[in-house]
Amino acid sequence: MNFKTNKIKDIRETYLLELNKIYTGNEAASFLDHILEHRLGITRIQRALNPELRLSESDMLKVHFDVKELKKFRPIQYIFGETVFFGLQLLVDEHVLIPRPETEELVLWIVGEHKNQGPLSILDIGTGSGCIALALKKELPLATVQGCDVSADALKIAEKNAAANNLTVSFFLMDMLKPDEWTRQPQFDVIVSNPPYVTNAEKQLMQPNVLNYEPAGALFVSDEDPLVFYRSILHFAENQIRPGGKIYFEINERFGDQMIRLLTDAGYQNVELRKDLSGKDRMISGLKPF
Ligand code: GLN
Image 1 (cartoon, protein in one colour):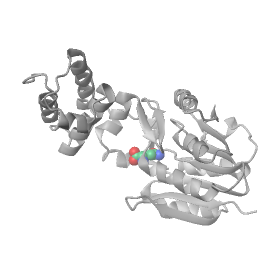
Image 2 (image 1 turned 90 degrees about the horizontal axis):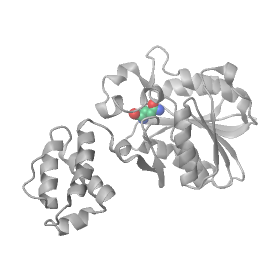
Image 3 (image 1 turned 120 degrees about the vertical axis):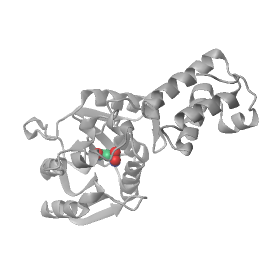
């Protein structure tokens, strides 16, 4: 890389030009600000007020390696190895999906409906980084929260996240698609899941940062049977949600109507479909009758 000087303004400018070849101007600028703050502790304001600030060789190298990864479309959350979800600092790596803002909206819904209830028991199916389970435990401290996943590597991350945030959530390995392996649990008051729901057909529309780095097993389902996880979870829930308990799902916006039908056919009442902040049908809940 050729910089005019080792002043922060020149370094930033050179990298902006580089990143602008593959990211929009706003994205590139925000990535660079993130890197300067995260790696060097230089905030946007400090950088703007001290454009002549000179970076050391070792600081320049740190920025260089991050930009190199960004140019390969690696998500910045994986480059840093962390992200923030519902105010929690979480570790993430390529074994877990990067928590999405829409999932924070799902958590907000659940918290709002169960805030004033006592010691609930909650299960998060396909927990990944543990984001839903951990945010629920933080917001509903009286609840007993468990999370399960088919990936042992994901569970390791989830466990680290529980420890790092001082939250007691237990995690266990379970394949939702293999009923023979399901372990019987005491009944839950709430089951929540954000299972894979992106169809292979939709894959074509996705960006390389998602396609090349995020775990395919956490994202994609076949075009023939896109609701396979929901059916399986509803089957599991037949015995595992107590009467009067609730189920919550994050869903693909294309399947709102089909999901209403699926929950209704499974006997749930008060089935409610909600939109995310982008106005897309994104989550659904149902009440198991007494
Ligand atoms: N919302 C995620 C995405 O669009 C998908 C999450 C999922 O498959 N559960 O990438």
